[in-house]
Amino acid sequence: MTRKGSESVGGAELVSDLKAAFESREPAPPESIARFKREKRSAVVGYEAMKRYGWHPGQQVILRGSFNGQSIRMPFIIEGVVPDQLYPNVFLMRRDYLNDTLQAAGLKGMDAIATRMIVRVDSAGNLGAVADFIDETYRNSDSETRTQTESDFLASGLASVGNIRAIILSLIIVVLLTVLLIAGNSMAMTVRDRIPEVALLRTLGFGRWRIAYLLFGEAMLLGIVGGALGSVEALLLFVRGADLGNLTSGLALIAVSPAIALVSFTTAIAVSVLSGTVPVTGALRIDPAIGLRKIV
Image 1: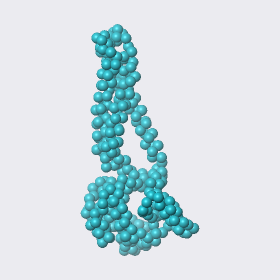
Image 2: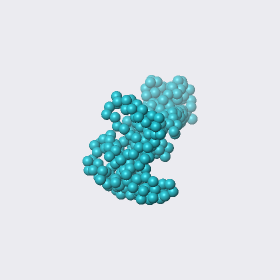
Image 3: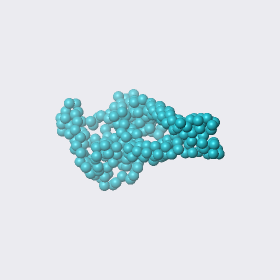
Image 4: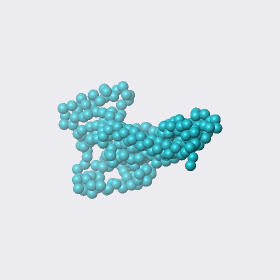
């Protein structure tokens, strides 16, 4: 849910968010929650950021940056990992620790500044009522709110980049057509070299369907080998996801699951078989006598 204006978020709320984040995939370790309450320097990080920087739970890291022209240095102890794929790059810290750091540097703290407020609802049926209550509470104030569901909030963040679905779908169609044309050209050259063999087999009494099985079998074999290599490589490279944080403000990533790899493998076989349809059909229509003349 997106919030415009001011709202103070204390350590207790962050602990609740930490617990909810862990519960999305696995139970929150009680000792991590206890340390997060006790130690201001505690932080939890999205799994993609952990992988990208080579961090691990229990490690101490130091973040450096500038705030209003003032250099800021903040050491943290990583207490755990947020495994949720919706927030692969999140770095969750305690607000009071940030305030203390800014005030120690002679800067104004962030007690009265917030850009969003996250609310957890007990059931999906109460989403509308809670959203209306929040927006009505802050209506006509200096800090009006616009309440959204989590999915709508993520979609609005991705919309700033463009229609991601349409872009990816267009790329898929272009790649499939390109591969189909390349595979069709390769199969046409292969079948053209096999025309004398096809004519000889037909002369020996082999039926068209049996010869077609042999030719399509060769095309399928190529699809199986190529599809297996490509699917396995994609699964190894993207099983944990490829970061899109620079484009989507840390909201998304591209991941390949075993199911997607299986679909890709099946698609490769289908493309290879489809690419051989036209050349194989043309080779089977050639009269054996004409096909045997092509032997040089």
